[in-house]
Length: 299
Length: 254
Image (cartoon, rainbow over all chains, first blue to last red):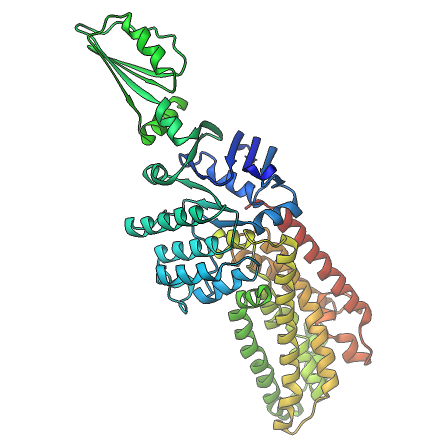
């Protein structure tokens, strides 16, 4: 079934004038997962999201959602009928009230979840009669999330869903997101700069760097494969010449060699033992460290 | 609900127009007794130049109430309040900057063509209401000065005003799919429409086709015949501009 991958992009390219925003993005998002989409500013996250929802057209490659071509008009409408979206700016219709916005949005979605609407209305304490333009950024973020979650969507596409929210509100939003995905067959695809948030809720991640996926996979697998190995010598550390696969970076600092690998840690440790160190210590990298190593490697 | 949302997008401008245009028409009607009283005192005007001919014609038209209404209201609208409000209703909307809810609208399961059609339809309906209400304010207020103005004539002029204004509206909407702000489409539209209408008036072309001849209903005023060719020209031009707006909106990246 094509829907086993909620999102699939193959060699996706997008240029704005002479600027390449995406340079061959390959992405597989399995259905039913919480997928974190990480990257620096300008890495191409928002562009990819816009292409998935038919807001921008690719200049090369393909993007499919639920197996449907995101660039074709009829299938793009079908994709959006099954997708909830929160934009980075929590861009809503400022001149409508909260109540009007909810009623307006619900008319487009036959599977609108009234029960969820009531739940989030009271949970988020949204003022029904207040104009959206008069809401705080946090409130607007919560309303945007309500509108996405109540669509009865098979896919949630969330571009920086917690940006601008205070920690309590961000936590509330993340809980709502996990609950929504946990309760049904929904897939959540969300971009974020908040690596701790991604670490907290994502099953799988992709780190995009300058328009390409630099790292992708299950979060547990990444944690297991990305390791920092400290090799301590009793005198000045020798010039390293490791041949193990997955070597990302080696830093030599007097008596210590600090090595970062994305896999094959055991092979590297075997290699290091031949250098007769006094101690070897191997520890997993945090997601933040994986991100920084990946981005630093790219630079 | 999409129609209601489209109505809300331009509601403020529409309501201002609905208050201002009929009021301006009524004020024009109420000034007629004073103008009529002054007319016998006007004499010895040099009508040799273009400007003199214009003044002479205006004075001649003002000797008759219907002529006064046409020269002071319907003839002026292409270069005054009518053009302003038609352009104002056409600006903004879906293609405006992202802070206007554009991405939210584009995330809904509706084609861009449908979104544009509703936006255009809603704005044109508002412009039709402004054109008809302001025109009908004339026969309604005329008895207050002891005059009468034919209801049918007001309706025909209202339709002509609408048709001519629809061209201005459509141009503004097209420009709104190019520029992300409210003001550039509005200013550029006026910078095109007003000089064109003014030039047509100064040239006093006998053609029934053009912005000013259509919007002022000049053929209907002078001959009593409906300006079918002018109306057809206006509707075809509007349709073409709206189609271009839809195409541009369709192909744009956001």
